[in-house]
Length: 236
Image (cartoon, rainbow, N blue to C red):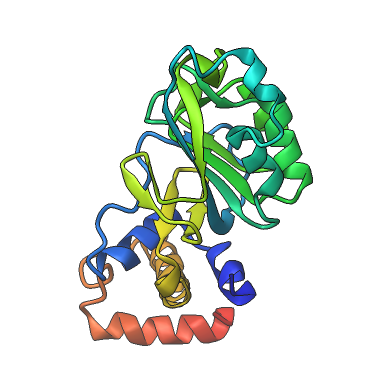
């Protein structure tokens, strides 16, 4: 992805991105029932590399399948490009784990920008200590084989009721994760930076006692004049 766009998206919130996407008619881009395993204090940003699970069937999913070097779960970890976010469709079912700490550690060492599942992680507390943003529904101990079969890599998926296409830009903060269609990521990033600057100005004014009427949204032109001066002072 565009490095400048990546840098911009590192400094904006998922909530702000929701508003920018909503202006373009995109209402369902925030992945539902997914949260950080542990807040990192900085954003996760990167293009999506996807893995799709389907319901497991016992004759296809004994423990021996992990001996196959091309097993889709293992192969996804070993082929996710550096700087990308591994996004997993686990059928919104956290009863069996999408992955555990060993696989996520390997993803981290290979340069993955983050990992998202609408299922659960085993060894979740250990994953939370790793230097990689990780998002899931809740901790889960059983292996994925008990309920899920990893079946497809880097195909369109659904994750938390949101369509994710390979290459879509994933942004996660300490609250949640959003999906930005790749073709509009640059313009969304630019708008979100502008929105963030105004929101920071608004917070400063509200803390100083100013009413939100006419300020947020900016329906009073005098507030826009104040904002212009604020930007000069803060070099925003």
